[in-house]
Each structure stands twice: as C-alpha cells, then as structure tokens.
Image (cartoon, rainbow, N blue to C red; front, side):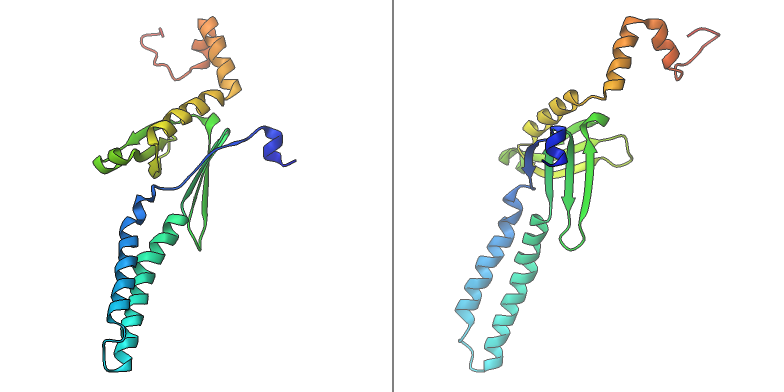
Length: 186
C-alpha cells in the first residue's frame, strides 16, 4: 500500500490544456504531407526532389512535432489533498499546491475559450504571481471543484481557532495583534 493510499489521497482529475491548441499544427502536418506527395518526383534533378522531402520533414518537425511535444509536456493533476502542475519535456518542472493552505481561484475566459467551455484558471496563493492553469477544459467546473476541495482540507488548527474566536470575542482580540489601536482602544 503506497503512502498516497494510506493518507486517503485520491486523484480527482488529470488535465492538459485544451486540445484545440493542436488545430493549426495538424493543418500544417496535412498540408506538408500533401505538398511533399504532390511535388516529390516532379523535378528533373534528384537533389531538388530530396530538397522537397527535407523541407517538408523540417516543416513537420518544427511546426507539428515540437508543438505536440510541448502540449504533451503540460499536465495538471488534481487530488483530494493538492494540485500538481507538471511541465517540460527534457527539463521537468513540478509544482504542488496544498488545498489546506487556502487560495483564491479565478477563471478568465476569452471569447474562443467561452465557445469551447475552457478557460484560464488563476490560483492566487498570496505570492507575487498567481499560478496559471492555461486553457483548461471545463474551467468553471474545475473552479467549483477546487473550492469544494479547499473547504474540505482547511487547516484543522485554523478552523479550531476560528470556532474558538467566534465563541469568545476576547480571545479573538488577543490572537489578532494586527488590529489597529486608536487612542488606547481597539
């Protein structure tokens, strides 16, 4: 039994950016293969026919394979305890956000993203730059799921302090030294 299973952590969703990002690279692939098939063998010199093949393969590599690998290299995993962001193909970057830390979730959509039901999910963790899940399918559903997961994983110590403070206002005033004091009163 792994530690994830022992702690009760389960995977809720595995996401990638919307596959719409592969539309233009796929058009390039179809066009390049069609052009190579049409023009190969139509030149008298062998080097010209090989140049058509080399140019087509270079075009396919640069404008289809590299965007495909970039898209495959981005993955977002939502579990019951955290959000895991993975990116990169040769150099991997992994970032984790715990739901118990609390954060603010915002969805930003362009017109095209609204048409396809996707959007950018911005997770503000209190740091300088928010974490951005780019062009995620079903962004509104993801936002509500993240809110639910964050509520379930509230830090138990913070929840206990909050409930104690609501029962005893004197305790709340003593635990919050950041309140402004004006003329000797709070």
